[in-house]
Image (cartoon, rainbow, N blue to C red; front, side):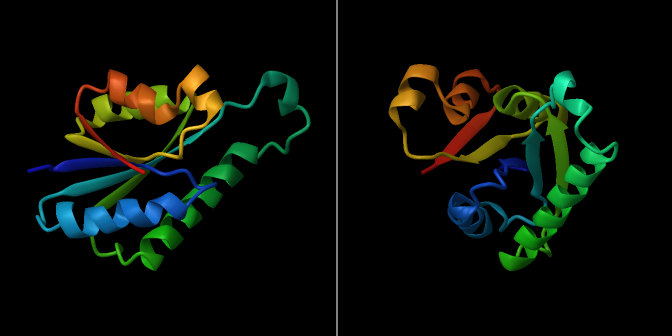
Length: 141
């Protein structure tokens, strides 16, 4: 049913990812034709800070994210699935929406944190993705 599954990964809070990957393993990846794409969005470093960072900062961050992706997949027994990984830079919701369009995702499966007062006032990444996505979105609490 879903051939292209986009999974945003927040490497700072992997607790929700257990539920996300359990769902993928049980419900979505039974079909061997399904492709899973993990996406992590890194913030753009302001120009005023660049002078204080080593020249290889972006490459070091990308390497760390790739290492965390690999560990995440092996710990959750998803190493044998068709998984691709991508790192984008910018606003989390904007980059996830852009990747879902660029990759022609059928569904986005995203974990969501418990709402807080700031979330109600400012909105969350998951809420923004649900509002603006051109494909189905499944939010896991």
